[in-house]
Amino acid sequence: MSHSMFKLAHISDVHLGPLPRLSIRELASKRITGFVNWHRNRRKHLFGGTLDILLDDIRAKQADHLAVTGDLVNLASGIEIQTAAAWLRAVGDPQRTSVVPGNHDAYVPGAYEKAVRAWYPYVRGDQAPLEWPQDRHVFPYLRVRDQVALIGCSTAVATPPFAASGFFSARQARDTVNMLRAAGDAGLFRVVMIHHPPIRGATSFYKRMIGIRRFAAVISTGGAELVLHGHTHLNTLHWLRGQTGPVPVVGIASASQGVGGLKPPAAYNLFTIGGRAGAWELKAERFSLNAKGDDIDAQGTDILAP
Image 1 (cartoon, rainbow, N blue to C red):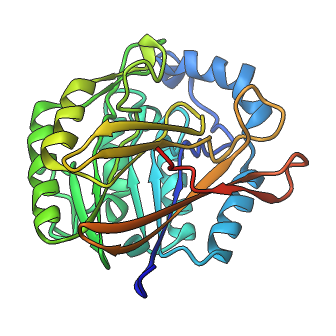
Image 2 (spheres, rainbow, N blue to C red):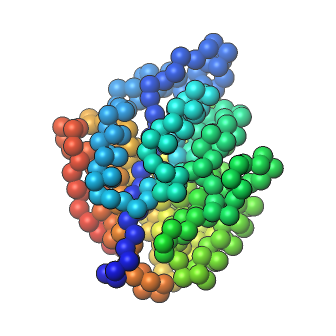
C-alpha cells in the first residue's frame, strides 16, 4: 500500500443508557412504546461498559477518524440528547468524529432539531457556518480528511408508534450527487454515511428506508467507494452499482450490544484506505466483543471481497 494511509473506524446504534426518568407527559407520546420496549428487551443487552471497551480498542488501533451512523439515544428526550452531546465530546474532537442521526434520534417531533443543534460540531460540513442557522439544511454534509471525503446523509424522521422507517428525500439526493461528483473530481475516496440500510429487504417493512431506489441512483450517478450504515444491529455486507464497479455497503452490530442477545455482540469495523483515485486500496477488518464480553477479538480482515 502507498505511504499515506487513512484509518476510519465505524460504529453505530450506540443507544446510550440508562434511560432517563421521563414525565407522564413525555411518556404519553410515542415514547411509551419505546420505553416498554427498552425495559422488556434492550435493557438486558445494552451496556455502557461494552461501548467503552470498543472505544478503547479503536483508540489503541490509532484510528484517524470515527464514523457514528446514528441512534445515539433511545427515546430522544432532551436529557438524553444532552448526555449524547457530552458523550461525543468525551469520545473526541469533532474534527475526527463524524455523526449522522438515526430514527431514535428523531424519535418524536422536535427531537431531530434538538439533536442537530446539540451535536452540530459533529455534523457540520467543512464549509458550513460554525453555528447552525435554522434555515439551513445540515444534510448531506461534506468533510474532507486527508484523501477521504466523508459525506453524511440523514434518514432520520419522526415516525408513528411501532414504525422505525427512514426517509431519503429528493432534495438530499440531488445535493448528495453533487457532493459525490465534486469529491470524485477532486480525486478523493468517497465514504457515504447513512443510518438506514439503503438496500431492499435488508430490514423489515416497518423499519425500512423510504427512498432506497433514489439512493441507489445517487451512488450509480455520483459514484462512491464505500457506504456505511447502521439500524439493523447486524454485521452485513451488500453491494450497490457504482460508476466503475460495485460499491460495498457495510452494516455493523450495535456498539452497546452485550453477549448472549439475539443480535451479534458489539463490534466495529476498521477501514484502512490507501492508494489513489483510480487505484484505491481498501482493507476492512472487523473487531467484536469476545464470548466473555470483556475484551475485543479480531474477526478477520478483507470482509469486503465481492
